Length: 124
Image 1 (cartoon, rainbow, N blue to C red):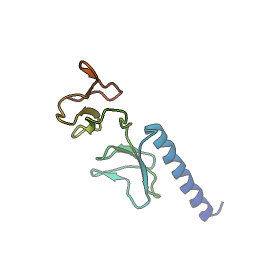
Image 2 (image 1 turned 135 degrees about the horizontal axis):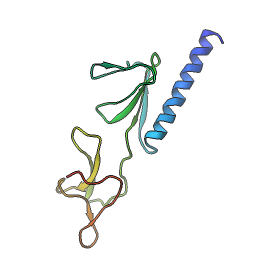
Image 3 (image 1 turned 90 degrees about the horizontal axis):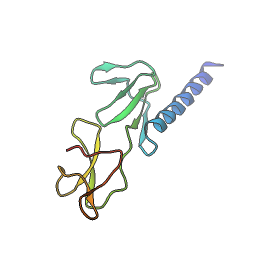
Image 4 (image 1 turned 90 degrees about the vertical axis):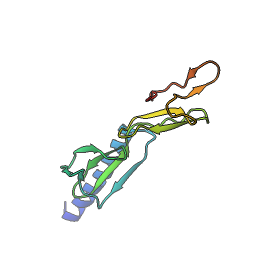
């Protein structure tokens, strides 16, 4: 292979790897690729293939020298009553569904204190 063909092959491999990573992290999450990003986060430098979680709760992987690919970590709840909302706990990537009127209360629906159940338990 010539150098240009090898670069194209590596770029395609990187993009496919990102798609694979994103599928494993979250089937409904958001992903992006930044070809100009460096493999550095909070003062730490990462090598090709290293993975880290950024401040926005995206799992990122280093594809030096091609850039960085990131996918949203975890699944976001989508099926809850309109009087509830999904919030992310400060300094954490944990999401809970709570009452809009009071974020300290877990989401309630229907009759007597039925809790909305999912893999995302209440935080408070």
